Length: 459
Image (cartoon, rainbow, N blue to C red; front, top):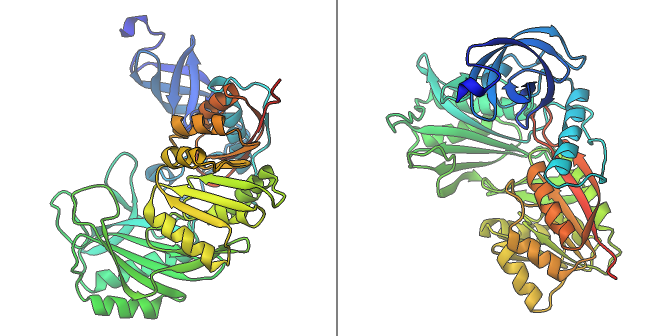
């Protein structure tokens, strides 16, 4: 096979990087054959070593850079290369925003065949650091004490880490305090090889507006040594603490949470605001990790929905009601649907918390519930979708096309599935008017987008 390829494994070659992959590697081509090289940036001339070849593409290692990109910077984080949580710290923030805009444009053209859609420049952050309001830190042991950090790339080796510069500083402080306390009272780290030990992860949630803190101890069994003392110390050490929760995960698995969650002290939830809407956040709630940019994203979705107060709106994949409640303030009625029953309970609670009475929530698959609503005559003037990375289910897209809402607002966390779904909606009678990318996760390759679609005029 390899004889027909323009490169061989272990070749040293000079290349020019043309692009970035969706996971942040540089793309170089040799006679049209793509090579993916971590840490390469578009426009750079470099020497690489070919480390793996497949039929259609290969992988390389950056050996030497002859000409650097003007957007190359020194990564701020000392463990950036080992950690893998961020992929773009070696690219300036201006460069990151340009790369993400290009990624959205390229994918819309290549996958969606949408060549004349207006893609706006990415809405970025003034301060693209310290934005995450939730930390989930695996716990290990080193020299007889507990450590918390992140797994090294492609391994289960924990890198000891005192701070993460994309986390809210409060989270770093709380995680370190909790790990020190647990270590002092003889709590053992979970050993996944032997399936022994006590503490698997420490999770913290921080309300950016309210200052409220939740600590979640994720353990292998119900038992934690000196549990009463642990709770007392956490209360005394952590300002703003409102909730201490234990989640028990007895399974031999990489999944973080187990089925049993119980409150050890304080409240079941903490509260935070996005804009003027208040949210109750439990240990297992899905809540956006960057509330500042979530507000930017949702305001754009609301602008695209263009509500006058007379519209019926359906919010597919509504989660805990975050977008639904923004919409409800401007719509006649909002119907939200979500597959996770606990999220629907949270959505109902959040509606009540804000005195919103024109939002109705149902648990179930969007692709099953919305067609039933449609059969019963519950149509929508505006339909909002915010699906997971895999995009919208085909049955839901078919129902949207049959239902014929005037506008569809598509909130996406994956440009590839967005492009695929926009193509289907275009073929079903919709026009993609514009797309606004939003940078929810600076220093990483992820990019969110909001797309506006309107019904094409029917002859």
